[in-house]
Image (cartoon, rainbow, N blue to C red; front, side):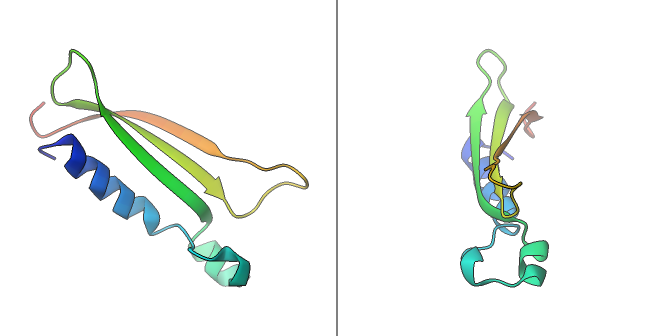
Length: 83
C-alpha cells in the first residue's frame, strides 16, 4: 500500500465481507458465514516511523454469551510498500 488511506479502504472492504448487514432477519447459516454484527477499521501512521501504520479492528460478533455483550479490539503494526 502506498498510502494510509489505501490500506484503510482495503482492510475495511476485507473485514466487511464478514459482517451481516441485517442480522435480525438472518438464519444460522448466514450468521455462520458472516459472523460479525459490526466491524470498524482505523489505520493511523506510526509517528517517527515513515511507512508504518497501526491498524485497529473493532469487532462485534452476532453470538453473545447469556446476558453479556462482547466486542473485540485487535491492534497490529503494519509496514507499507515504502517501508
